[in-house]
Each structure stands twice: as structure tokens, then as C-alpha cells.
Length: 181
Image (cartoon, rainbow, N blue to C red; front, side, top):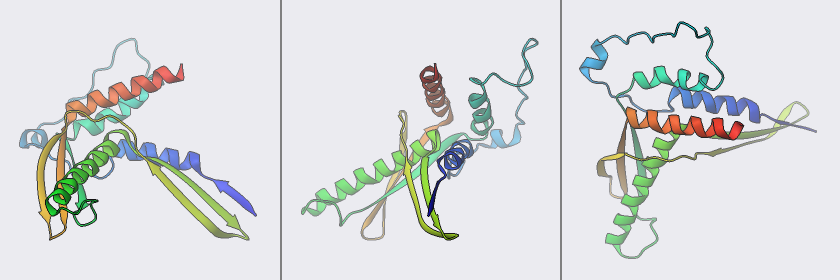
């Protein structure tokens, strides 16, 4: 029986998810839709391919230009909150829905780390395991709405301006560059 670990493949998929911005609905103003994006100026003495430390920022930039803001929605069930007081359960559900929305924003900004292992025996998949993780810092997010959905769920929607996303990603990429040294 052989075990194949596909961590590198899924790490590449996680990077693609980062570049694709995960799943969000871009909101664009009328000016952003009508105005063409100006091409980037290229320095006279630079080579055609960016330096390795500049490549990630250059790959992320086109995606950021397409979005005015990032939005995320989080959900939480009221009845499963660990309190017997119904009012306290509602407050806890609102807090949990906001945290779920923050997690979704973090996935959009930094991507999601995906670790997968597949076990194959006799040319048959015996076990397929996926683990995901998201890690990052979010600041400047604005609460758009908190809405009850049905009788037992709250929905929280958060928004993050693209300039804040650009700052967060710049800080993240500079930290990665410092670790690589």
C-alpha cells in the first residue's frame, strides 16, 4: 500500500485561491466600470520579468484594481449558543456571525492553506483527507448589516476597502520576504 501526499499541489491551489480572491461578490462603481485601467509604467532599466520578491505583488495587483471593496457574510445559529437566556443566545449568535464574516474576509485577503493526503491501495482511493486553515490580520472592516435569517439564524455582512486589502497584503508579503532571508 502506497500513500501519496499532495501538499505541494494543494499549496499551489491555495495560492491560486489567493490570487482569485476566493469567493466574493465584487462591487464596482459606475466610474470603475466605465473607466479603462491605465497600463502600468515600466522603468527604463528594469528587466521584462520582475524580481522574485516583486512577483507576488505584481500578480495580486490586477485583481485589486477590479474591486472597489471586498464583502463577506457570516452565519450563526441562535439555538446552539451556550447560554440558557434567549437574549444572551441572540447576542452570542450575532458575535459568532461577525467572527464567521471576519474569517471569510481573511480567506479573501490571505487565501486559505489547504493540506491534503490521499491513500491509494490496489489502484483504489482508500482515504482522502483535507484540512484547511486560514490565518491573518484584518483591520478596518466595516459592519454592513446584521440580519435575522429565519427563526434561528443571524447573518452578518462585513466590507473591507480595497486600499486596506492592498496594505494588508503588502505587510504580509514583506513578512514572508523577511522570513525567507
